[in-house]
Image (cartoon, rainbow, N blue to C red; front, side, top):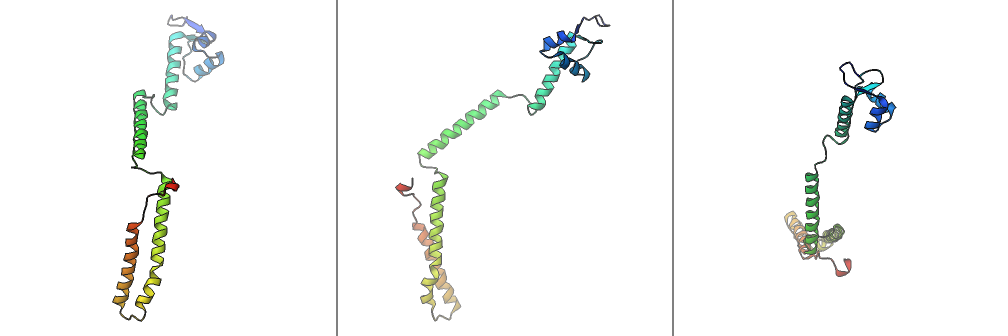
Length: 164
């Protein structure tokens, strides 16, 4: 019995109750987690309460500050599933395309731009040969550049059937 008349128990009894070793009970008492009533003896309720507080504190710090909110987690899961279904529907309706297909189409567009722009000098050379008016030279070059860019409006971005 403790000085207050409350029964005390040996470390082995407390260890069995908390599913710990005797040594671990002594370590917890040394760390101030569970109170020791007298040499080698412990009061039951304060030991259980102290150990529960210790486990709760450890769980909070290890669990990023709060317990799992299952309702919020379920809502996140449902949202992700809805987004996946919406994406699949958009794909089926042809509203989205795979990234690889988009990359191929853009590569083709850029290749066409490069070809058209690089062919401007050969088309312009004869038209401005002997021309002395800077304004006229600029107009001819600009006209050819505009034609090269306009030809891109007719460029087919749809993949060939064998590309898919």
